[in-house]
Length: 170
Image 1 (cartoon, one colour):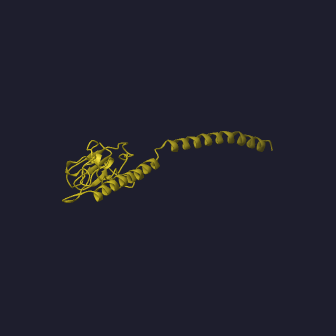
Image 2 (cartoon, rainbow, N blue to C red):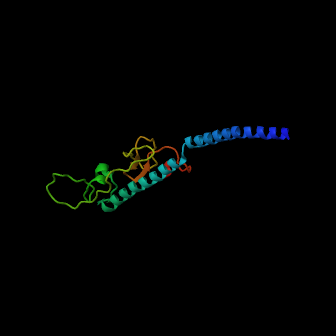
Image 3 (cartoon, rainbow, N blue to C red):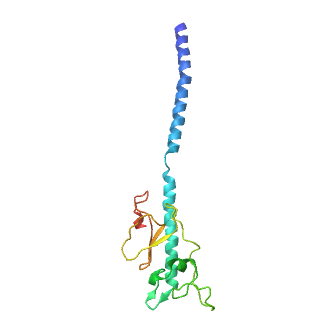
């Protein structure tokens, strides 16, 4: 009976040590998992990028629907006109921008945006204009890339999102 009592006492002494080690291990595991980078923030940035790109594209499209010249619809920035002023300020039907000292009333369109949306991945809101009609090289130097000849816009992000979709395909 004495021996049984001695074994029970030994087991009772081991249990708190085991529980302490298990508790330390559990706290360490939770800390390690918390320290891992969260893919949720990247997923949110991808969603916000698509939303902001949609806003920019809708503004470009709306401008083109309200403006024309003898050749048809105009894209902002086409014919070497000021892309930023065309979207951020008032403009005439032919795409020319507001001149504060013109001294006459005119029919104005716009503004289409209060400011250019920010690309959440880069934190940039500037737009890099590129010529041509093919897919531009996305360098990450600007928030967005825009082709005045085609009216197309992309996020200026090389690579792909978390789903494996190239940013050039957005």
